[in-house]
Length: 114
Length: 110
Image (tube, rainbow over all chains, first blue to last red; front, top):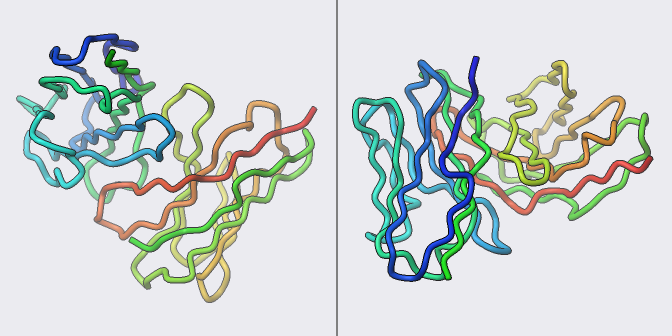
């Protein structure tokens, strides 16, 4: 089966611009997660969807970040306006419906804000 | 979720068993031990998980002490492709998010 895919693989934008990251989970996976690693820091959880509903968005850093998962399939993460500290690698992961134990991660999107 | 402590880095000779320790002395009875790894420039990859009993799969073995305060991930025959950062994560079943620490950077030496 196809794995989790993320688009784009790299994005370079200027401060103040908007960027939208996309994640396509494994087919049939109701759970979808976003994580990120900013420079020199640990991988941090951002939020978790169950189908189209936000189950846990406790890791979202501020209201410049907006995640959506319309129809419960792919998800987008929009950063508007982007700041320098948003630079890092954004990972998406998906898993089967409960009882879930294994999260399958995508390759990540490297975001650089200049 | 309970906090884990891992060595910052380890080396292992190719073909030998790699034993990666993890301390989780504050683990609760309903928390599982998970291991993930991140090979350079890739997304994290699930390896194995367990609650109380030792577990084995095609990638690795997980040994959990009887008091559950520590565990060891064993890669039985390490190859160069096993060079990665390995994360020990303690997580409540049903609590979906993963809390990554700094992990152990494992280097396999030819």
